[in-house]
Each structure stands twice: as C-alpha cells, then as structure tokens.
Image (cartoon, rainbow, N blue to C red; front, side, top):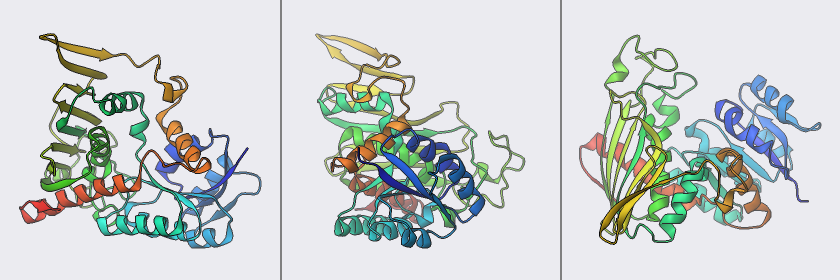
Length: 358
C-alpha cells in the first residue's frame, strides 16, 4: 500500500477542525511534520496526530528543507496562501491549500503556473463539494436534467456569526470578510453546478454597517469595531460570457432571518433546484408542475460508500486518491482561480462604483 508523508503548515482552527482529524482517517497517510509560528500549536497537533518520528517546526521554510514529504496542506491566513503553496510546490510536494485559493488573482495565477511547471498537483479546500446533497445535485446538473442553467444564486448569509478570533477581521491578513471567507464556498458550488467558468463582468457592493456596533449580539461574543476592518456583508451580480447570471450574497452580520450558508439555487430551462431546506428539484412534467424532495440521509449515491463519512473526510480521501492514482483532483486550481477572480472583481467594483470587466 502506498503511504504518503504529509506536512501541515498552520496548526490553528481550520487545521484542528478539518484537516488533521480528516487526514487521520485516511489509511494511506502519515502526518510527519507540523509547522506553526506558535510552536505550541504545532506540538499539540504532533502529540495527537503525528507519527513517532514526526517533527515540529516554527518556520515553514525550515520544514520544507528538512523533511522528505509527499504532500503539504497549507492552513494559514489568506495573505500567505500563495507564498507557502508556491514554496511547497517548488520543494517537490503536492499541495492542498485551504480556501480561498489566494488573496489576489495574480497570486492564484502564479500558484497554477508553478504547479504546471513542477508537475505537482494543486487543489483548494472547498469541502462543500463533497456534501451528499452537493454531489447528488452536481450529477443531476451534469446529466442535463435541469437543462441549461441560465441563472443562479449563491447564498452565504449569517445573521450574527462574526468570527472574532485570529485574523478574520484583519483586511490585510485576509483580503476581506464574509465574501472571501464564506461567500467563496457558495460561489464555488454554484460555478461547479453550472459548469461555467467564463465571467464577462461583475457589479458588486460591500457594506461596513453593523460592524460599527458596540457590544453587538454575536454567536462568538461582541466584536471590537476598531478591529473590524473588513466588510460585514457583500453582494455581487455576475454576468457570464454566455449570458448566464449569478447573484452572490454573503454576510457575517445582517438583519435578515433568511439565513443559509454554502447553498445554491439554480434556474434551468428544464427544471430548477435549491438547497435551502435540504435538496429540492422542481420542474414541469406532462403539463403539470412538480417538486421533488430528495431524501439523502440514507445515502444511495455510489460515490460515498455509505452515508456515514463526513464531507471533510471524503475531501481528504479523494485528494489522496488523486495523488496515488495520478488523476485530477475534484477541485481543479483553474476553477478556484475563477472564484478568486470574481471575488476580487466584486471588491474592486465596490471601491470604484463601476462594473469590472474580464
């Protein structure tokens, strides 16, 4: 059995909550290197997930130079995604970079160029593609059951769930707020369902209104308005080259009860679909309208080997399988690049009060 040696760069929340426990359930993986600027976090990760001969580092460059790895997972703030991913690729490693791909489009393009030049695989951590309802709906779309999907909505709305830890509120470190943090998931899902990666132009607007609130009600406690330097909500309208449109909404704090995150609504010529309360397909049959609620709790999708595996573990296993079998990863870097291009265009459109053309 092929066993891949994996190094983790960034042992904070996303590593502890997703990458480490998921990789631990993949039998073809050994986690042998752990790096974090707060060395205690790396040590804790090593103690729980590392092999007997695993090592801890506080500098990723030292880790890449010292260790003979196969795969590196980049779980750091957005500002360093490109820098670290490129260094890991150059060192001869396959790379999974946590979403979003990069802080800027230019950085994302460079990541792809280096991956191609080095011949190493690169993927981005859009685990919501691996949710049962997402995989089922993508198969429906790919089979043409909705017809041509000419319009869609990408939903990433929280009423009051502003992450107040780490660097989430720091524009310099993250590049933005809910749009780049959770809007990125909703947009990725929507583009994937539409199989349309050719945007023509974007109009967008970001807001920094509720962010000014003192002692605000929030799932993780009040935020400090002085530290809240990113948007609290953002909205974008994307027109694709073929005339299709996407409305994207994202918020951490918004006076709305219509709360849904990492969801998409699709409008096709033969039918529609929404993920708002489970998965529902709608359409017309023999002159009558129908709604079909898809029950997914018991599995039934061949990809999954049963319904008890989480989307995070499926993401990790699929990624490892792509490396071992030399196949394309489910999330292709060229697709993630388009997500970054659109997000960057929404921010630019908001700053200039003008459309951004591609």
